[in-house]
Length: 305
Image 1 (cartoon, rainbow, N blue to C red):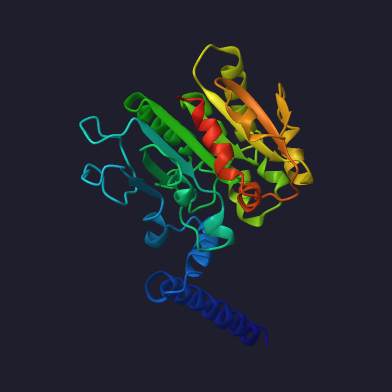
Image 2 (cartoon, rainbow, N blue to C red):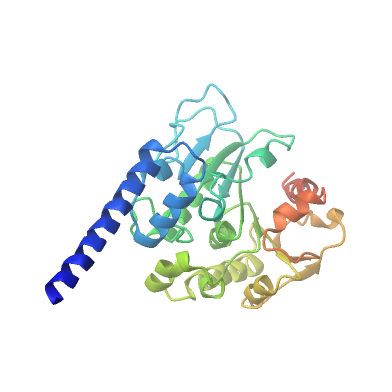
């Protein structure tokens, strides 16, 4: 009886493993559905399995000059090229949030928004397939913070202006690199993933204490506010979203401004926390719906003129 039960359980387990493997093969190599990115990112977040389909979207560099061939369109690791003669004066770096995890269709964020500004800029779009708050690098070792700070610093030496932008998980890394950029714009960053209550972040919480993100962000905020440097950090928060306000309250030395007018958004240095009349975590979408997202960003950018 015991042997029979054991064989039944073993058969079920083998069947489940085979189904899991076949599902991965189907999603990776056969399926054409846009939802396959969502499923693969969930698997990657939970298991650390690397999928080429996701990795090819990790870093995408788009030079404004169409003649530039100094970087591949997709690359696992992009090293800034000192000898590139096609560079613009400005580089936008976008850190995507959990779009791959939640929706499954958005690989890069802010791509269409960047086209609305009236100056030429190169762009670097970043995603995090493992949903690790960018604390993992492309080799899936836990050197993400060091890697992305180093990347931002290298680019800041090549460009006159480096502008960072991101929302949610992506906003967290924007804040963690903000002292190295000219201008950083973050929407509802998650500073303590344990407050987000999302299963797929558990590996990050296992590897790092919950204070690792907050500590770096607080260090950067204090540095920008106390030192004379041309760094600007704008953090936009949803005032009526309890979970986002809980994240906001983790930060000390806050410079809070209740958002009323886009004209007030062109600050030239310092750190500013903007409170918006919004109850959603996806604040950029709400601002876009109200027709003021591009105006807010344009006024932030005007401060660089």
